[in-house]
Image (cartoon, rainbow, N blue to C red; front, side, top):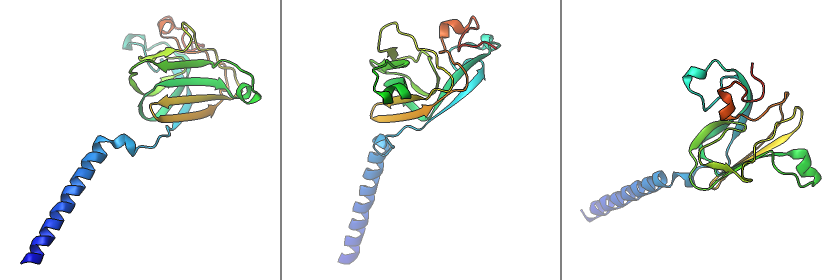
Amino acid sequence: MVPQRKSRRTLLIVLVALVVTGLYAFVYRDVFRPNEIEITHRVAVGPPVRGLSRTNQSIKVTQLVFGLDRKCELTEIKIINVAAQESGTNTAPLWHVISDSNSIPVKVFAYGDPIRGLRPVVKKSRPLPLEPNVTYRLVLRAGRATGQLDFSVAEHIAPNRKHNAARGISGGQPQ
């Protein structure tokens, strides 16, 4: 009888340990998430990705859209010219925004989009247009997680501006 009691006690201890481990993994699930953010990009022609009501959906703009593998509370977005960086010239980023506090979780955003919770590093600065056939680097930070993407565009892309979207001049080229 004594050995059976010990085996039940051992089984109970193992089950409690598994439940505690499961709860820990659930509560601290970011610990097991990779620190690398996967980023994709595409040039989209159509209504702006964000920022317009349904009544303005007839506006067609060309914009560079970035997609992330999961929703992230971004703390920094920076786009730089790769050739300028590798040549050692000290050039300012084309677009550089940071978070002072909490940013909203996003999975998709367009170049130059105002994202709630992010502000330009240089006050009142605006994103610069992207030139065709130039390699750029997007660098993202979301807490401890980071992501990087080298990309180029085949056409001139002007940054998306929410206040101009309603007038049909957002994203550079109204269609």
